[in-house]
Image 1: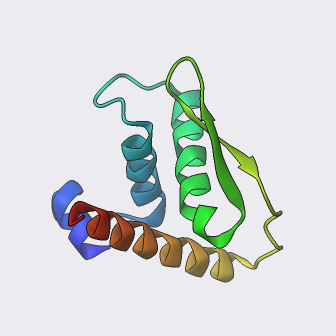
Image 2: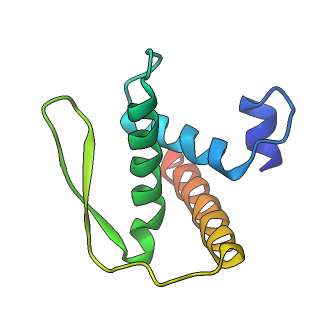
Length: 106
């Protein structure tokens, strides 16, 4: 969290939602553009699907005509307490960045 905050948050600690949003922007791959409130929610959804894909909850399905990725539900998320949700998302964020780092060296 600190490394990402240093890179993107001007040194201020970014919360998990901000990191998820940045992952969604990365996965969308559209670069800088004006984003509507609805699209911000969709970007968060893209990130969550991508983050939970390795756990078997989602699988990439296709890119639509506008280049937005779509995922299909593979397995329903279990009912988790807020603390458990937070741990799952933090774990998935760490895995995401570890995998991206590995891919960069291939």
